[in-house]
Length: 366
Ligand SMILES: *Cc1c(COP(=O)(O)O)cnc(C)c1O
Image 1 (cartoon, rainbow, N blue to C red):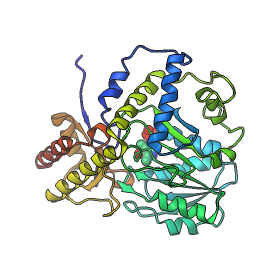
Image 2 (spheres, protein in one colour):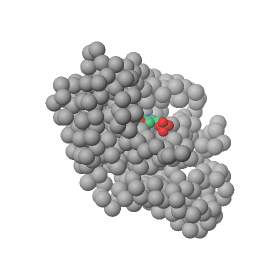
Image 3 (tube, rainbow, N blue to C red):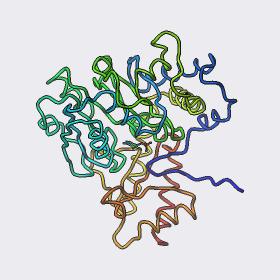
Image 4 (cartoon, helix red, strand yellow):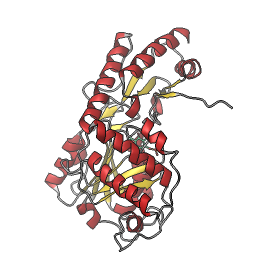
């Protein structure tokens, strides 16, 4: 049977960097093989550079982006802890759900979808939260929030509060600077701007957060104490916890190599330029963008479906006639918004021209 090849311009997965795909065909090594452990160590070192952190506890967790969210709440929240969550889209909603399942006393701060988080309102929600959580790049709405401002403001008021940032769609797409921004906990996912297949969640923990960790979290698989004993050999020698997804880590290692070789700032600039080109092109076609101006993500553009146009039919034409996947809207905007991703390897002007031309043709046909 023929393999089907698509241009993945939705909210993820994106087409992986060629280096990431090539790495998947390397002969498999054992997860305790010294050759593989070198790759793992170097993957963690490369992740530190991409995160902008010296955090010793920086590692890829086994699972998709959501496992990073789960690990954060499982390892750093105790029942009854006050957790303030800024909600401005689907992934903020998910944080409320996950934090609640680990017993947090959740204080949610709702924002209109399509707008960034309001730091003053998040601060005012509770005088002494143990953790404040927000999404850096809301993939459901295409909005970038100012995590730097939030984190610095939280810590200016209270050095003990932890700040958690969802960086699933921001890492390796727009600037992320964990140490400079004083962020305590952050997670990402491989299938967005990192340009790798889904399956790993890069995770980083500040020393302040590590001191406050739950010693025996209610999850065995995501217990960072146990995982750390394998990843960094912190208990003296590396001990088996669960079998590391060797092929996925090798693939992530290769993509990170590609990103660092190009240069992190060049990679951000490539995303910025591609996003701007797409957003200008959509407006030129008479379409209206959804996310608030000045807060639009370059790597994920939300655009309103024109009146009278069948949004699902347009996506179907794009998929079957052009081999292009774009996303439907999220939540209440499922049929009134499209989401177009230019992530990782797809953050290029040729992809922009392709999707603009195909979208114009598909709308005319639908
Ligand atoms: C995709 C995404 C997630 C969830 O990641 P999965 O890989 O689907 O588990 C979480 N947060 C944001 C902002 C995302 O874009």
